[in-house]
Length: 316
Image (cartoon, rainbow, N blue to C red; front, side, top):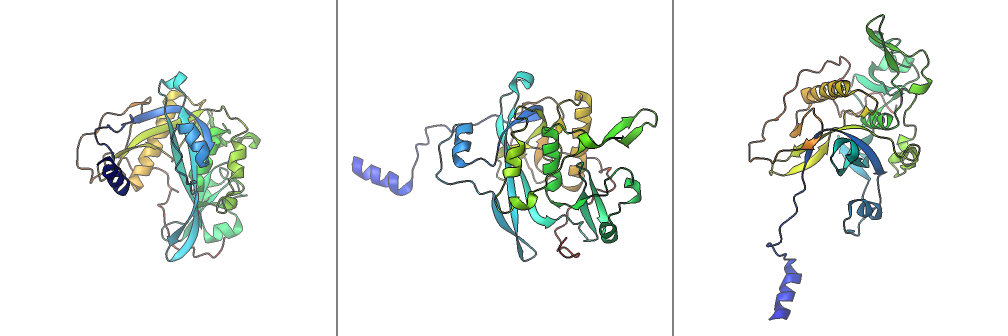
């Protein structure tokens, strides 16, 4: 009889349902974080999270279809940990960025996103790109030595600049009551130079940057993502990360604006709250067919919606 039971268990992979599954708490709000690793191996990941190995290495480069054309997409997975001594919460999780081997075009294909060496982005026309000029309203506030941005590059660069505590290229001028470009931009330089290597699985640029200031902390906004099958997942807002030396009040304003801008274009099923990090309330069964978060219209005049059209300008 015992042998028969063992055979059945092996054949069906049955498990004892009397053993309860572990439900980990989810958190929402703003917290200081540290980076533990980027694109870890299976062994490294198991050591960090205390899990058993699966025998399969993580896949960080895949091919995706864009209008019938296969292009490579790199997943940049950072393992992050909240600073418990400051926020009172001990949370280790991951935040993923997806960068595609494709230039970031506006939806109608008429404009291209470019980035300068100071982490700033801007939309330009074909003629402006060819002549290395910028829109009139960005003159004096955007570097002419810019490059065409990959899809997903903007968010990744912003994350790294916050982690490395790079100075902002613009400072507030009390005399004019507005932001102006720094007289000396040296301390504001910072961009990723080897993104093309990521599509071949070479992430040495990112791994090397993490060794410069391994104990640096910066701020992230955590949320809880809800799925249509009533499951909840810990999530991290990827549109903005804030340097650690920014005041609490300004940090909240920056996150609120970035959240409003994103949701105006792309409402989702993730709950965020602009507050110090705290445990999220237990979910109640509800209709999640509509977004739970409302937002004001985006104020950025050059922040055009995402488009996946074929690049009409050739190989940039």
